[in-house]
Image 1 (cartoon, rainbow, N blue to C red):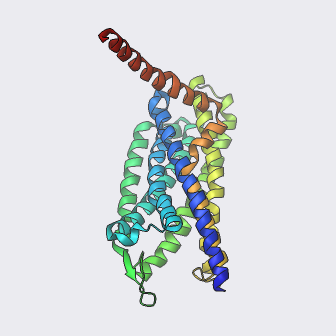
Image 2: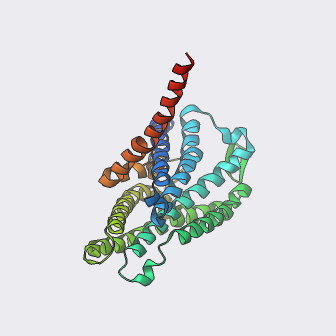
Image 3: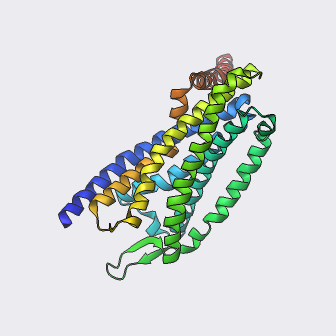
Length: 324
């Protein structure tokens, strides 16, 4: 039994180290490129859906560094900062919950926004605007910061009475139960999946009818682009969030002991790695599904920033030559 559990532990270490590290690296680069594109183009800066996606990219970087990178260090390299620092023990738990909820909220808001933007009724279209998007983003961010504060209180370094080893975990059993039922199952699983699938389906129906409406061509193409990007991300998020959601439900409806079953430990760690993929791959989804986004990316990187950098370098070289 112990040898079998040891083999599962080795598999977990290998998977979390290599899959986790690649997710962090790819995710940080991809989300940074998202931010550069969305900030650089006026078309996106003035669009509410793009604002949600840009803010989500900032939050995703925070989630990957706070959550996944620390998992890689703990599992793959035995560098556990949560047992070395009581502050980091609390802050990591706080940050992981806060960042994931803000990110999921941004995706939900972006989906609802595209449904409103593509509606045929002008009354609903007026709720898709950049001012409202900024307000909702600030309100939701403040809400999730306040909501996550209990993790600063109920997450502590606990010394085991049997093994005498320190671990960073819950110091309150009731709050642990609340975390499992409310946060893992509802807020980070069932609820965002329900909202995004429902409003994504409605937005898809609206986009199919958008060609028959009298609206400016530029806005029509932008709405189609953003809706396609968001819809594909919804499909992708469904498959990345669902495994972790299911494996959080399984122990509640079966007799499986999560801490002693090697197969379950392996499965939940794989599901957690897949869960973090959600925060890493939005940029690559946008680049794959939208030709216009690829053109915008090329324009931003090479026409705007690279040429601007080159124009700054050339005069500096000319000055050096004159001095010689």
